Image (tube, rainbow, N blue to C red):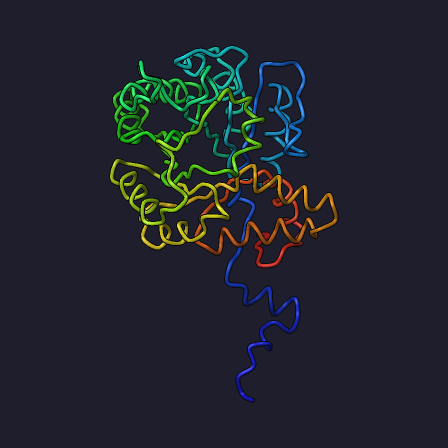
Length: 330
């Protein structure tokens, strides 16, 4: 038998040499939550993840930078909410204050990123402004997004994560940034963001006030081609990076977007994906470390240039020590 594929799997050194997918710490982005409180609070449905105080956020950001992660995505959790999410555009609001603090702390070492969406700041929990009938008003929401984008840019965000899934959001925010001289601030478009059940623990993390669902603006899980179309539209509007979210249940969409996108493609390993692995591992049903590595490698293999994951720092540390297959500890 001349053809023996097993030759290339025979030893750890051989497997490492011929690995077709490689992961590096700088490929990882850590999502972080910050609250208006003196002490951090654990998130019950996401073991090991915290709602940070400003002080603990700074410390955790420094730890992440030292581990070599590529970026930090910040989410603000305010104490007071209202119908239009005014806390999102307040220079003294929790997200903008946290952004300035983290940018000052580690802005030269990692890409400081901010979630640009109103859901954390509204008393109804939707990602936009509601009209008189209680529906999300797309164009009125765009006005709030442009104000929010400018506030985040002024606070020091290097990359704005537009996650609200409003039509025309990339063009609106890009035009506003450029008009105010923020031409170097990049835009990450959550282009293919699906109306997923896997966001459940995130709702606890941001103390979501949502009743109902977001199916009128997030994508239908049944639709693959729609995800690719949304990514094309966002690139045409000036997105610097496009996102597929969630990651693991939408690897087909991720692969399709990555195959044609002229800009970097990222994927978000969301809270439900994290919680499932942690819960199964806690019950002894999975090998935790191997499962974490396999899930993130699968996302990279499908075409993601970077992965947002709550395991970013842990993975970066393991990568540096050369403890993962298909890794590049450089």
